[in-house]
Image (tube, rainbow, N blue to C red; front, top):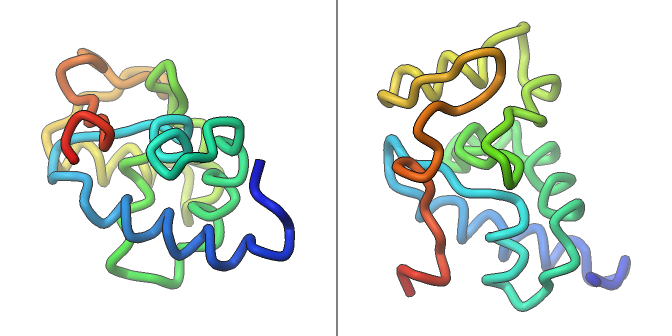
Length: 112
């Protein structure tokens, strides 16, 4: 688990990983946390994504829950912005669920 005192440093590490997610691909909060050596900190990764909306180079829309659900969509302006951003990249979403999730999933631990 990430210590509260080191949370901003962890957020920055999260942002660096999320910037690496390829266009048209997604990852999960847990995959990012695990890659950073903090496997039990998926929720903190979610907090980092929520705090990233003023950082235009962090594609927070590409981070979803472990089942491919757009659980963070309520933190985006408007009701469907997260889905629209993903669909603009060729990721099909039906009822907040990424279709062909395995095909679109990007695991940073497998890449680096």
